[in-house]
Length: 207
Length: 278
Image (cartoon, rainbow over the protein chains, first blue to last red):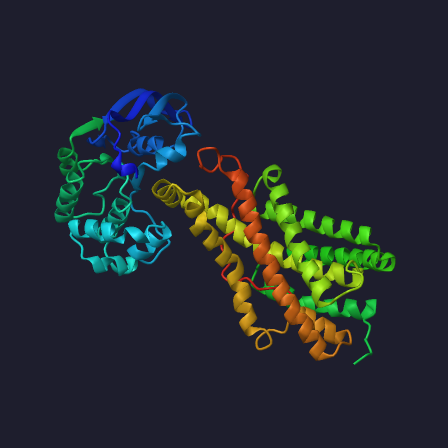
């Protein structure tokens, strides 16, 4: 099991990353190190490359130059599958083609991990029956927490979150901060411009 | 039931006068369709006139090689039309779509002509060409809708694909909702059509057979066979097209490659209603 053998050292490392979209430079010789078990917030104004950085870690965006390593593996076509096996990813306001959280777990092939998902759901302030509630009939914040709970059910080593607080009210943000704060064995990287969230993290990488 | 009333060219020309009615409507409501209608009706007449000539010729020869080559030409034209209508780049998609089309035809023709109709000569032009043409024609329409939906969904819902790919680490799982959406969009109208056939619609093939002198019971049995064949053929075609294209549209990181779609591609909207032609 991946989670039973945590990687020790720099979980994510960016070395001299240069990235540009349509000749617009996003990163020029960008360097960063995120240690295993660290909870890091990537801050910065819109368009500075917060989401692009999360995409770089997952191999969805390939830099023009420089290298990225995740869990000691240099990101490349041969390692990308192993790298993704380490990652839980919570995107921002995703449109899901399923009716509820239970169907989402089914779509992701993790029905067996329902106890873990339910545990995370409770920690995030929702009752277990929210897994069966229609996404159309609950608030954006509740849906966001269900998606986070389902991802946490995967129990992998690295948690990437894009604007995790975007749809949440203050109480829900506090619960999320507490839940994420308890994940001591995970490396957490979030892209956020929420001050409260950023302050709860171990460190902020400002872009 | 055996007498076929032939339509001579003069009568056919009189029949074409019916077109005056839609043209009047277009004129009154200033709808710019008159030119399109006239051009396309002329085109249809020329095309079908040529088809009549070469079908007479092909039916007379009834040669397995010529018939097979003709079917291959039909597949290629269908594939190129689909690629063009969806707005994809030909060089990437012609082979996977062709193999998908050919496979569906091989399976359906073998089954229908070999096992159901039990033809001594499965390449008999009178059966081989029309049945293949009907399956291909419908597969083409539904493939265009389905594949357009598939590529459009990958473009518009990239975040969903990434979400599933990262969390599951499994590309088969990550593309599943996209395949489901494409299959439903392509096949749902056909499934819905099966429920109303005979009640709301009388299929063209069946009507043609009855007008051509067949017994209604015979025509209906053919119709049932052809509808099942079309549905299965379309299903095989759309799934194989997606399975084969999935081998080429993703790069080594599992991301959809750039440059697969033409600049103005994926312009087809989801049709609100897509009827089966038969």
